[in-house]
Every structure is written in structure tokens, then in C-alpha cells.
Amino acid sequence: MSLSELKKILKSTQVNEDPSDLNAYGKDWSIYFPPSPCAIVFPESQEDVVKIVQWAKKYKTPLVPSGGRTGLSSAATASNKELVVSFDRMNKILDFNEPDGLLRVQPGVILQTVQEYAKDHGFYFPVDFGAKGSCQIGGAVSTNAGGVKVIRYGMMRSWVAGLRIVTGSGETLYLNKSLRKNATGYDLRHLVIGSEGTLGLITEVELQLASAPGPLHVLLLGIEDLSKTIEVYKTFNKQLVVTACEFFANNALDKVLAAHPTLSQPLDARYPYYLLIELEETSGDFSEKIESVFSTLLEEGIISDGTISQNSQQSEGFWALRERISESIAPFSPYKNDISVRSSQVAQFVNECSELISKKYPHFEVVWFGHIGDGNVHINILKPDSLDKQKFIEQCREVDVPLYELVARFQGAISAEHGVGMAKKSFLHFSRSPVEIEIMKKIKAAFDPDNIINPGKIF
Image 1 (cartoon, rainbow, N blue to C red):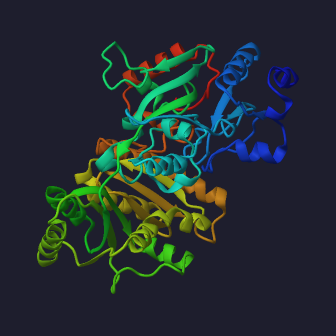
Image 2 (image 1 turned 90 degrees about the horizontal axis):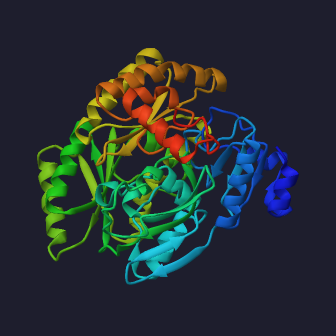
């Protein structure tokens, strides 16, 4: 390996070997694998990316693509002297095709920047989650990001119209060309989406923007029994346009209010669970429909209490109670897991999983939250103050196998939106058959025959 040659191929300012930067850029938000990259390189164009791949092929140096590094599966972790390829400098909006509603961007553009650009031009980009202010579009594509609007708008793949990538062979591919209809064989674009950077390096993304929604209103409901949440969702969804449906436990609310004293308790009493529902106003009888559904649910004892936002500021306050959970529990060094089952099974899964964890480690506090409308549950085990961090991780790891066995019994996925990476690759067989995994490996070899693009991830 010759970093001096790489500095000549690019510019010396594009190659960084500073130890503090290596530590920062060599990992994502996961806690499982310590970073150990050889250097960081900052391409500024697709041509730079091709040069980097050609250099990596010559010296058999593995490459780890790096975006906002907000993932939780160690897919962006360089733990074995890999070269980190950061897309921080490929952060430009390249073109906006208004008639087709297409926005062409480089992979390092921040998700929130895309959302704001779309809004300023009378459009809407619906992929939305807590890390939107720091995650990059390339990473969102690589993980097929989900978030809070999936039940209305789908995952990230629904909004990727075209992709430009550089494969492990150094070839450039333009996938789908932003066509709405394209019945010409395999759609390789959809293989790249969600591949966690293992098939190639994304250099451009063409995003399909949506029409701006009508006014949005947020309800915050108190629920005694988690099994009631799916009934609430179904009832609202039959009569109104639901754009988001989120749940969180009472101890999640405790942590948010403690960490953010400017936020207030939403209801007069406290309840075991809370349901946040966002609705789009699409008709003149919107208020009457909400009142009718709310009254029916209250009279039938399905919900215990609730309130609806009266203005955008109150809507933001309700959303903050849900979106700030992750940052509020961060000081407790949580052991995180995101899984998915069918929406109708969420309550049963949470109950059985809670029993599994409490039986093994009754002293662990578990914070639950997730997306009730799409079956995505986030499990957060908080580290007790008395327990060493490494010992805590080891104990949590002991729960992994029975947890994923439970997921398999529910025919769910061991990862709903954070990917497999290194953290979950040894458990992939709980969600994918041996034949599926073998086909995945063959696809990887076709795109990356020298195995230099993010090796050791997924399988």
C-alpha cells in the first residue's frame, strides 16, 4: 500500500492520517468494534472515486464508504486498516428538473438539506427520521433508510429514481436513468439500495420528489395496553390519511422530559404507552372526522386520553417527545436493537421479548419505542450504573440469540432499518435462508470481484 502514491493521484489535502480524525471517521454510532483505519480519503468528484478504486485494486486495499456515520450496525466501521472513503466534500445539489420533480445530488448532501430544498421549491421529500440533520443521502440509500413516514410514503428505495455508482472493478454505472417505466431486465439500482456500501461507491443520486402534503396535525394519545395501538391505527387509517404512527413507553417519556426540561408532559395523567399519530388534512370535514374517531375510541376504552396539536409549534413539541428519545437515553450507553414484525404482531412481540430479557436480566431497564404502522420496534437496554460497559455488552450479547430466535418465530427481520453490517452478520440466517445468502454472495462477487468494497459486512 502506498498512501504517497494516492496523494499524487489526488491532492495531498484529500488524504488524512490524523489519529483523532481516524477515530472519528473510522466508525459509526455503534459500540461493538473499535475503529482502526489506515487513512481517510475525501473524493471531490466521480473521477476521484474511480481513481481511488483503481488504486485500491492495485494495492488490494479495502475501502469503507463513510457518510454521516449515523448507522448502528458497524457497516461504516473500518476496523482492519481499511481506507475510509468520506463523501463529506461531495455535497452539492447538482440539478433540479422541475417538470419531472427530480433532484440530482451528490452522496454527501445532508437529508435535511434535501427536505428544505424540496419545500422551498413547492415539493416534498418524505424520508424523515431523527438523524436527518447529519445523515447523508448516500448513506440513506445504502441502508434503504426508513423513518417515521414509511406507512404513507414507503422506504428510501421508493424515492431513488436513478443512481451513479463506481463498482469494485472501477467501472461506472448509471442505473435506471430516472425513468418511471423501465422494463429492460434486472433493475440493478434496487440491488445497490440497501446493500450497505458493499456493491459499489455511490457518486450521484437522482431523487424523486413528492407533491407537498396538505396541513399536518398531530395527536398524542395515552394507551393502557399496547395491543390497542394497532386498533387505533386501523380506525384512523380507515377514515383519514395517516402519515405517521409512532409509539413509545412511559419510561421513554421520563427520559426525554428529564433531559429536556423545556418540553412539557402532554397529558394530565401518565400512561404505560403513548401513541403519536400524524394526519394529513385532505377534506373540509377533517375536524369532524377526527372528533368522531377520537370519541369512539375513548368511549370504547381503546384509548384513555389524548390531545391534538393546535398549531405547528405544538406539533413540533409532540414530535420532540418521540424524536428526542435516542439522544435522551444516550448517556445510559444503551444496547440498541431494531427489528420488524408484522404490525399486528408488535404488542405480542414486545410482551414476549420483555419477558425474555427480564427473565435473563431482571435488573435491566428496557426503553421501547417504534413505528407501529410498519411493525418496526426499537429495543433499548440501558446500562446499569454499577455495571462495567464491556460486561454490559457481553451480557446483552447473551440475549441476542434467543432474541433473534424469537424474531425468526415471528417470521420477522433482525434489522428493520439499520442494516446488518458487522454487528448482525452472524445472525443473518435468522432472517435469510442459506440459498438467499449464497445468492447475495454471488451478487457481491459480480459487482466487486476483488472484495475491496466494504468487505466483511452483511456476511
